[in-house]
Amino acid sequence: MEKRFLAPKEIANAMVNVGVGKANLKISAMIYLGILAGVFIGFGGLGNTIVSQTLGNIDPGLAKFAGAAVFPVGLMLVVIAGAELFTGNNLMTLAVMNKKITMSQMFRNWGVVWVANLIGSLLLVFVVYYGGVLGGDAATKAISIAEGKATLDIATLIFRGILCNILVVLAVWMATSSQDIISKIFACWFPIMLFVLCGFEHSVANMYFIPMGMALGAKITISQLIKNLVFVTIGNIIGGAIAIPVLYHNSYLKDDLKVSKQES
Image (cartoon, rainbow, N blue to C red; front, side, top):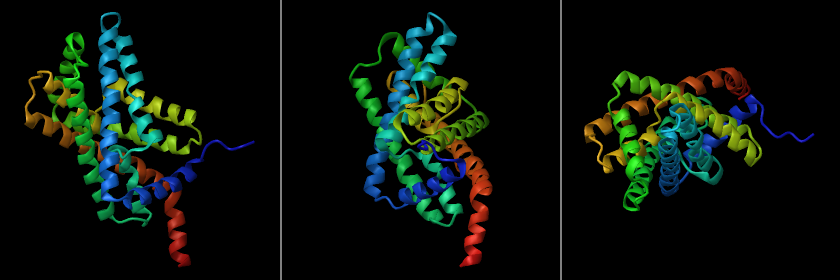
């Protein structure tokens, strides 16, 4: 019978190759694809806001779950349509640990893609705002989401960022295992739905949520926005670039790397 998925060790090797490809992208491609990822994740955030507000008066628990169920469309677009997402690219540390790319190559990708994600998110905020997509109760919900995120303390931002990106990179990990589109959709859906349902913090999602709330009148300062993005990004890196990749590298790749060094 045809094999429709990769085993964990095969995923680890595939992710190393993905990291090499991302490290060797042209800067222009990183920018274009990073902008797309910012827009894609923002679309998920927009859908989350509208669904949560629509069902909020019926059942708050159902509204929270429905909003979480819609949000994963952002990562589905990134993975299947193709885009460069900073949080997913945290898995590039696997390629660094496997000596396939350098730290400088990885940091170049992360820096360019993070900024491009921000640009894409702000572009979507601009279009949504001037398109009048969010009004009335939906605008109130968007403001509430933004203010809730902007007032979190530093420790909360970091720890929720760690938990968030553990789930995000595991979604990317499983999607890499999947060999057909339907499987990739489900691989993305469950972990991303879970992180939104749990209220974890995703740096690129917040690049949309907080500026969207600010555009609609949320009482948020630029310093609050910067604080959120900086410390959530730190948490995302710890969860997505250290916790998961280090454990998988030590489990599946470290011994092979030692053997190849001995043979050479």
